[in-house]
Length: 338
Image (tube, rainbow, N blue to C red; front, side, top):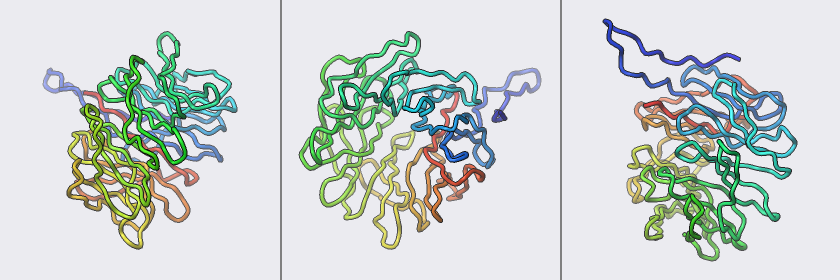
């Protein structure tokens, strides 16, 4: 496998230079010979390193906090299990081996544990595995069916969209160490929590939710449990993502007539909602670079899903990977070394 090039610290005049940040790199899924495989690309190179090639679909890739490993779900054993792998394709390790499906791995902020969804008693249940010991614990109690796990940046809490009834999917917030029962947010009949994201300071959660007649973006205060609605448009407003400094939220919306979902930015209080892209094609699945300069996303154009990157400073836009069979998903920026 080709390795992705990295910056090397130079010695100048006999003095060591300050540590250099690695080039911006993106992890993403791309179709290869009919299956979705893992790739890593250096920003702007349009070339990529293929990490997996097992003729089974991979899913839900995520970087470890230090950027040294990638967790993902793979159907290599016919059902989905959780694996980790280094960004050069080495050090591949199978984490789970249950007979049911395990999906959506989420790293703890210290990189010592992985939370994921696994089937227990006939429903998707949040689980946590310690990577050193291999011991697994149920994260609960969760009475409904879990639809994802989102770890707070400070490591103290996890947020779980939990289906508890017909057209009722609440946001459950609970201690990450399993102590206590947690509490529900947006816990009302007829409301379905969809996508969510923690603020960088772990005090708020932005989420999208369906409540007739539309899908809108909300923010919940973790301490008080109070929820504020940020968008109020008949169209779909969804997929909120925080900027690294917590001063902006990106989201996608179909509010402009004649367009599909487009990228938008707003303040965390819902003010100053502005369009950030100007195509007529559907856009989704965003990831913000750590320096706040770039937004990676997926665009559906000419019956093809392609990963793109937009420079928010210059409005320049470019492809992540120009080869492949056309299907590209889940672009995720690699954490920088500080």
